[in-house]
Image 1 (cartoon, rainbow, N blue to C red):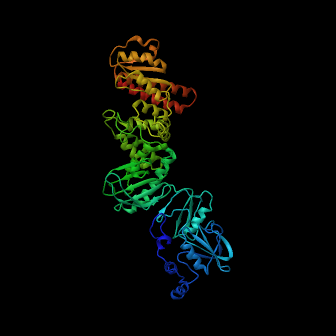
Image 2 (image 1 turned 45 degrees about the horizontal axis):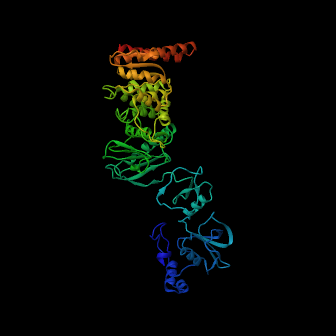
Image 3 (image 1 turned 180 degrees about the horizontal axis):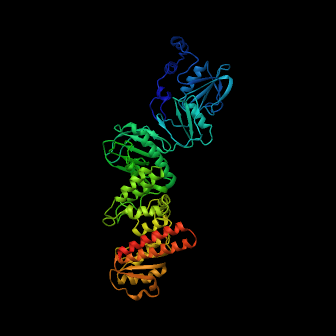
Length: 559
């Protein structure tokens, strides 16, 4: 009988609690096939006013949700309670002292109402139709601007059941606070066992909010919690405000270690490796509040931006050429500078800028100053944060994805990088620069251009031999363009180019090519500056003139 009827944890065969004296007598009576209630009442001093862990409410009724077509006759409140406890599915009951009628219930319904000739009972720890999880919280998704005070878990459940749009709730036994929720969102566990790479720590949740769940291993100094939780919460809010959604869970999960693993790594909402969460996992430490202490977490946050912003999957630019553009990761430098600046951390921003200006890399060529010569000028002249956000928004909108998915289909090439950078900075988005280091079939070139959905081009740079240039002549007239730079490494060009020869500039070396491009840029800036001057906008005119002089300087260097 115990196995059949005594309360168990939902979905298991594990008993939920110890029995009380009344239940012991009840099951003993059933097992012996006779009523032992009277002698039990005398022998054990069994009061008829209480019943196990059910809460009693006098002068209170729970209408509806009856388990039986008619009430059962029982001598007292406790007998009615025992009937409920031993009836599968019974969560509450109502009893009439005058008529001795007992109504077992499936739930407390809307909580009940005052009624003189009624005594109601219910378990404060169960709630029909809801799955209970102890020592768990559901941050965010609150239905009400503040919590409500209720006496117990079941009361909070009733509050949810009777509140329109409520699908979950959280309850604090110590403060008696109840938070009705629109959804479970991402349930945040008090602990988290690592199961990726060589990580195997049992992590402890030390902070959570609507933007962040922060986990430490046992060696991380707990005095760092306020500093780290504030920075990461602010940073993730800034990221979400600018870079769109990052999957269904709006929270960043940040993990910190001390004295182990080293470096850091990210994971994303679409990866099972870290339980489908947006994660940054940092090793080494320690993590005290010093300038630069948040550089590694900030770098890892950028990986989430490049891999998952605007609900996309993957990064067309991650990795070294030819399998990517910015390695791991030059774009993170300008992102970090922008993030520090956006959060008002100007000392951090200036420190990050100075470090990045001095950095050089060996890709795409030795002594390439990504930040100094490309990213920082592009950022400052293209609208700062707006340029960065637009870059990833345009990728999400237009870069090729696997059919029927939001997963990028491939890495981008240099021409595409320039194209999307130009569009993001709101330069003339018709300009498209395709630099080919190897001769390429015009058909392949045409296919790439069509994949990018570009109809009108201002500029094409194409490396080709004579036969390939002739092939270009037969196909490229189908594309509207302004100027074709043909880089043919000194080989004479066949005049088969025909009617569109006047659109073609032939250059024989890369230096000559760069001189042409810089001179063209100089003239564009200069003419734009003159136009602004005519319109009386001297600020924009001066800016254009400065850009013109810079382009002229580049051109002179190539001469």
